[in-house]
Length: 581
Image 1: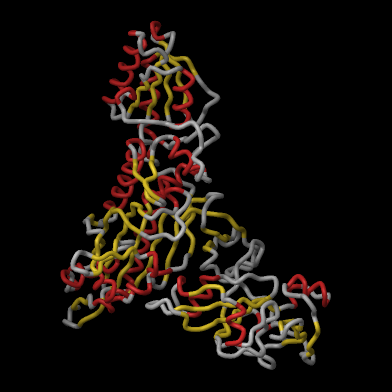
Image 2: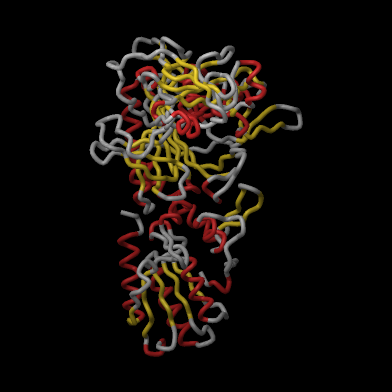
């Protein structure tokens, strides 16, 4: 491809609304164009990168025996109503109506559609196992789309669904996909860590998230170097402080604590450590169908802890969108809470959720549900009880590993894929059954496996860039080689450039020739911004058959070599790295 003929434009300045490298660089490099908030078009180089990732995904899926099909993105509401997700999924589900008033949604994921296919076609144990997948545009009506392709409202995803006769079969299908995902992300050039994850709106029993390590990632990951434990903050079980069974309960006392509305303030006033206090957080919940208020929740953790919202909604068995922080002035008359002075005693008409750590601790300080007053020597069982007692606290770096007890470490990650053990959640609700050898009916056991294709492209840019631009791995680069012609009007320079291009393309190497009538500095800046792996410059020594050769990832090492040697080196590099192995 010659850039003088290419529909192409780069930009010198960072876009005003872009805050992370992948968003800035992909816009500046002319890879994507924003059409609306969270909605992007792909220009030629961007689309080539997407197709490279799709091809890697296809090859690894096909290698496992999975079969590619294609579903419609427009899904009738009836399918989602069968599983209850029409209401459960919440406002991110992009609902539409046709001209006759019938309800549809733009598919954010396709469990119902694939289960519908299975229940009609997979009726005998002889037909199982089966794994079907698609690569398709998905839609989620994000409240706050941001970070370019990392949180958009329209995106490309590979979703696969396995169908097995039993749990043992599911376990095998799950691990087949798990290992295939490891290969996909390795081939894409990503430093990726699989971690235990929450199943969220997809449901099921077990899940692993594949996270590309990045400072801009939205996933908080905790891991243990000693035993290998790794999990998202949503999933990571916290170890409770050692129970104080040998500590005597002291008499309950009410203390006047004027103006102490925070844990810090009451600790300063009463000369306490935060670990001797109980923190209260107040919430209102909503009906998932009508979104009307349907109750209050008071959650309690140790004073130095934070509440993990995913653990809390899982404990309450409600969708994440059905909870919000409460208006304390409104909640007070209904429940007895007092803003800044709420404790577990004196509350009524609300669900009390107590972190699993608190029952083992003795003589704590908590709000008295009375302005400017706290209780000290508060003890679980004697003074208060919870409607739900479970782990709702947030993991912190340095906390003990739930597996081996060693201090955990924290990092950030970009979720690029996730695998789920769905079990019979969808097959039972939608009537997807098979007959065994005895003609007895059983629900099909399912798994679900997703890869964010466009998120993967953005994650690659996040991990592979420098101050000048993108540094593409060979396997997913839009082009393998950039040939910059200093003076396109010079016949010899163009002759050498086109010779290199022709020889490389004969060997399957993808080449872009910058033959634009631009200053050399503009061309070099664009070459660095675009970041294609091999950079060949054809200039004043072309008449001697000499060109400049360097790799984008090794900016400081440029060599003057013959054009034929440049062809050989580039071809050898691409042959060695194009499959990302």
